[in-house]
Amino acid sequence: MPDVKAQVRVRPLDELDIGSITQIDERITGIYRPEVWERRVGYYLRRDPESSQVAEVEGKVVGFMLGDVRAGEFGLESPSGWIERFGIHPDYRGRDIGRQMFDAMLRHFRSTGATTVRTLVDEGDDAVAGFLGALGFIPSPLKALEAPIPAT
Amino acid sequence: MHVENVTLEKKFHDAVEHWRRHWLPDYDLLLENWDKYFPKDEPFCLCAKMEIGTPDVVSIGEHAGEKKRVKPDQLTEEEARHLLAIIRAQASTEFGSIQQHAGTLARAQDDEDRYWVLRVMAEELRHGYQMFHLLLSQDWSKASAGVRGEDMVEDVLSMGTGSHVLDAFNLEYDSFIDNICFAAFIDRVGKYQLTMQKVCAYKPMADSMPPMLREEAFHLAAGVIPMRRWAKRAAEGSPFISMEAMQKSVNKWFPRALEMFGDERGGESNLRFGFKDMKNREAQDLYIEEVRRMLRDINMRFLRARFPNRALDQVEVLLDRLEEDRGRHDGVAYEDLLRLPDRRFFRRKGEPAFTMVGTEGQGFDDPESYLTYLATQLADGYMASRDLAVYAGALREVASGQLSVADAMKRMPKLKRVGGTCPCSKSVRWVVDEPAPNGH
Image (cartoon, each protein chain N blue to C red):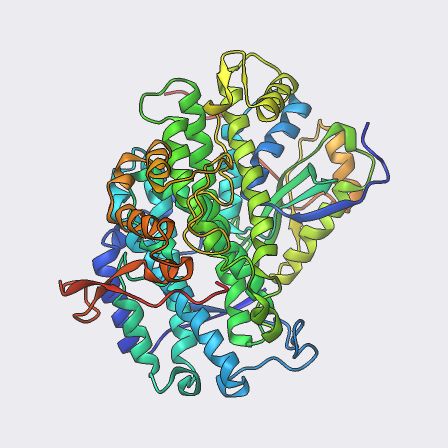
């Protein structure tokens, strides 16, 4: 079992975290999908390498939170911080690791001039919705909509 | 995080553009396809990017607590000379890597890999441009013995593979594998240097580092991600890539990467002047540990692809066993994995220069057996290069006592362009140049 008193270190994401993120995702979902994380980590590192954060305990990556700063999408001209993906190794939950990564992301978002942080959540996912609510997220007037594309 | 974009005076900007047309002919193609390969990313800007709001006070060295210097005249002559050498070397690496990448870029099997490297090349061009801004925006005459900024720019633009300041930038690539391994190994040293220089007591240098570091993060990804994908393909039996081919490229670049930190015993001046926050050996040690992690990560990718039905924990145990006993388990040998060479392997600068040490740390007694051994550890194309021939000559003379190690380090010849800055000029000759300054 991990040492619950061990220090958590939060730092920006780097390219050597791909393997650890893949493993955390596999622990959570049961699916091994390195290609997905190679693509996503490559995306964040080329766009905004200081936004995304990982959490380490005793040198091991145990959590990640990926996002970036964007402007000009959906009519939102001023820059917003976006949080897209996050995960915490099941053995390390309940240690405020998600909050610490979120705070680090907020610090970076603030330094870029962003005043709002946004994300999307599946309404049926109570655990994730609860976590985001605890971080201070509230329902946005901007509503996510979707429609099926009819087959031709 | 606020950044000011600065453009060089037109004649210097044009000189960089002219150089770019020779060495980065696919630049326009990159810009045309930018949105296809890098959707939503900021468009590329050939400009110097200066971070605003970095610390004003020196944090390290004998000037700690004082206000950072903003003009070369505020540095002592020794400090200014030292910093000028760092800037010149940094500029040389940026332009040098583009020339190296250009040689084998078109051989990439995958268009995405090719465009990633093209973006890396364009950003290296910007980094070189950034160093030119540092050279041209201030008067360095106190430190340059009267050499004008524009002469220094011309000097750097006239360098080619063979005449750059650091050895790693004087080696031709043998295949596209070198493009990728170079990004994973040599750009990683760049990350260390830029990170160390974030504290620089000369503020314009410190202000240059954060924007360059942001771009460097992608350069490292452009090395590691293709290596991970290649490891998977190798495990699946692809005839186009093998772990052995990657290992030979690792063996080529890792020794040169270590030498980019400067002699293991040095780096004191950088600390004293407040230009960097680590000595050479300290930074090199951290780098080695990071590269070890990188190779383990790639090996894990290899083994997961080799044993797709095994659970993560089982594969981790297998990798641990292979690393521990260096044996063979479940049909996989330790030699099938990527291995970090001994830090003394194939060194020609620094503390272990011209010692004959193998990748596993084994010693060799005579140069002929060592060179025969090297032929098993390096790619055939590289073994047949002028670089290896020169190294072999120096090694034989060192071993026979005809040449001291110190003289051998200085003696590595370089290809010098003598006909002006434009690569249209073919006036080149081999000369023995001064060694690279320590510490970068």
